[in-house]
Image (cartoon, rainbow, N blue to C red; front, side, top):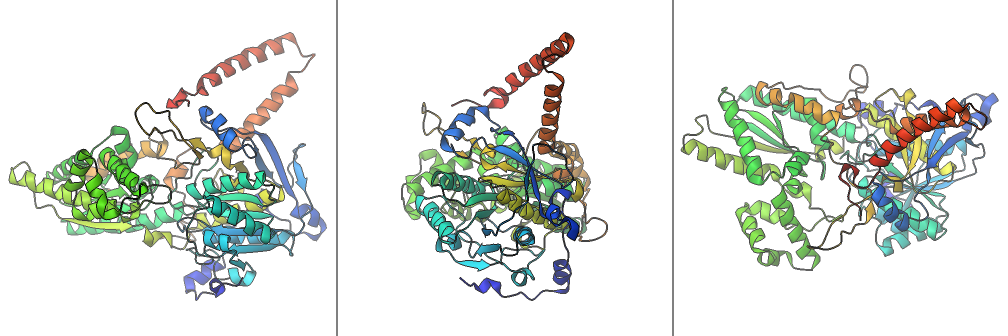
Length: 627
């Protein structure tokens, strides 16, 4: 079916320049241009590791029962043409392939390059292959509304922002009706593969779809791609997400501009809410890039169980401390998920959502709240009450982008500072505040050079996954803080990224949960958080504002990586491969007929290692509780 989306866009000079940029590929994905090595050039080489499990051992049985066809599949590593790996699967035949692709979730800079990379990989190996884009995301999938991707269609979308090549709509494939509609579409369109571009929720849906397809013997293989501006699809296999780099850079420049304005006028505080859903990854990275005076980190609030009063006091104390140094300006960053990190507000939201689920009309909910919830609800300003009553999202979370947490805190801080002034506790100037929300300004931006490269590479990996006949996998690239030619490309089963979140519906109830890929929160033991903690006192008092400037596509700064990627040591896939090499060496050295001393040394070492790993993998290690 044709689509109005195929109409070429009018591009500015910069957009035209960006459309000419061709991302680099790691050696394992490169195709030889030499006619004498045409077969070698299009070969896909894949090495399979051991079968996978999940990070939380107590969840393995639950996930295995829910996903019997797709749990425990091996890791896949894609190899360069010259790699000498005896057990590698070598794929030289590339019959015509029909693949569908759709955007699912909030638009994220770089999404178009996933489509471009996938298209390029498909066509270079067989020009008769077809890539169909589903117009309108999941709704387009259900109704089989497609657009055939061609060079002409892609011409004005290469390295461009937004999702307007195909668009997006309902962003879920969850109900029985939706899953059946997706299967019917894949069968009717004779698809060999379906690539779902999205974040945490979208890839959880992709995992369920892959399992259902396997159960029904549907030939379509499902592949997920980690694309989300929130940066919360992080685990041992995924170092960062497409779009996160761009969004943080654009937001950081905006924040820095505000910091400069604050320091110039010396009379305003700016409260800035940053898009990022439940977690604070965007806020943390932007703080490291721009050096605002304060960051209210949602994960810190949740860990310390800080109340709304605690947070208000914390900000007021900072304002008063700065006033004692004759500083009456400042910038405070607030992640949009903060509202769900404050214990009493989270409990209130849960009660409201429970009433929504019971079918209670919105204008009747306030009268049905419990006494404590009603008291808190009435304490809040009218605009916040109205926003808290909004229907929850499809994942049962609050509509965080619509809740003006920054205005709530601004009002409470202003009220407290006025009280302190009246009681002569605070003797500085009147507290003046201006509120901003940054998110929409960034998510449609031209993607950074990193996001262009990363997305294009993931698109190519999607083809490799499908060529290897894999179902229920996510395209992965690791070692990302290094240049592209050092990146490691592979695929990890979606089920290996799952956990089971346990919750009880009442006192004494048995904890229950459903396997899913969950949002990764900011690691309060990680190096990025440690870096912020070290700098926070000087950020607060010394106005060390830093302006990273606008996105750079060439020259100095173009190849810079986010702090949260650069400071962490995350090459999990590389370490797994190295571990396998060591295990293979042990097997080759310790064979029947080797010396008694070698056997004793191996036994002693292996016993020690096994004992340590047994402790680390028990369900209670790290705070996990078994079902």
